[in-house]
Image (cartoon, rainbow, N blue to C red):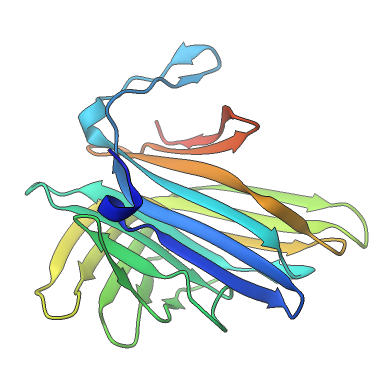
Length: 236
């Protein structure tokens, strides 16, 4: 059962410009008990105890020109330790960062995360870490979803979302390292130019589901007006 006390979600409210705000709430992982998903009218097969979810609720008023890196994943390890993460760069850094990881639903905040990768060869492994080395990750991309939109001088978007696996560790203060390998997750790089003001003050909730085991199974659910729609399914 999810609650604020038991899962310690990350909640961040920051100014985007002096008179406007952005808000985000994230939590990982959520273990599933029962749900049903279909694609093109066909049920997707999975084992409930091998699927975890993260959720993201974001809203507010972004800057007219906005781009950011976003990394997220969640899993239950072989010893039943649950881990999850939410990391970002180029957004929510001036005030309160939206960087955190969870171990058995206990949250550890991370001040700043650095991304080291080859933009010309994005399928090479990427290094994601913080200066204090409370977390250190190697991300290996295995597939991607991408999109471009050109709506003239006021609206443009370039979007890339890589799905793959994470190897690395978390090290909360005063505890030992929690190491892991082959954890499924994704990294996203949206670059947007929108007419002012780009606003979504009520927020948009979404869920990401990750399956444990062979192959890549990553589903990104975008909720609109109470209806769940699958935005993409990668590598079934």
